[in-house]
Length: 64
Image (tube, rainbow, N blue to C red; front, side, top):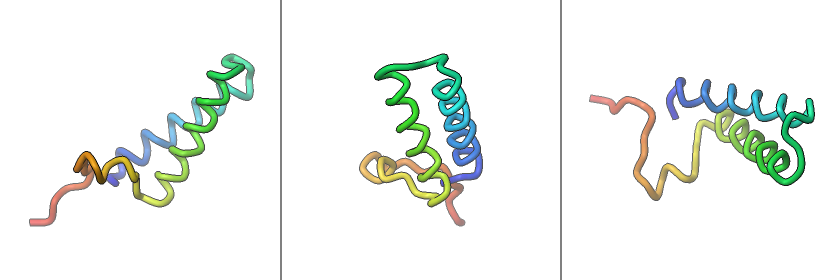
């Protein structure tokens, strides 16, 4: 996982958390966004996204 991907995931997780904890988004959508934010944080800290494997996605540069 590339550094840009990590930064975007962390920023989205922060936005989702702020939206949820300020009650801007609540109910089912709020819970879904909060869980998605937690998943984004975990995957950015582990530098691995399991969904990238089946689709063959890479956000890092290939070594030459």
